[in-house]
Image (cartoon, rainbow, N blue to C red):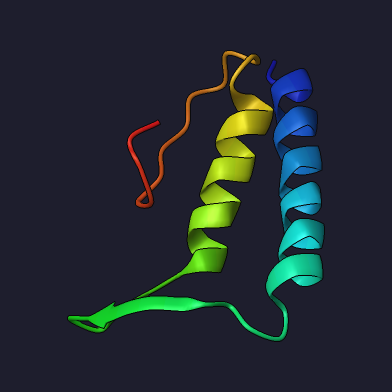
Length: 68
């Protein structure tokens, strides 16, 4: 039923992990640490990467990092 969408989402997830490991493994870049919610540059980069990859697929995105 949603096999194609699942494969796309799965591939984007794997690509996102690879990007995070390449760019942020040693330093996630803490941007804020308020109210027990640590926000990092890695969080924002992952969000932007995922939104970019899924933007033309029609797959809905729910994210606490932005309003996609």
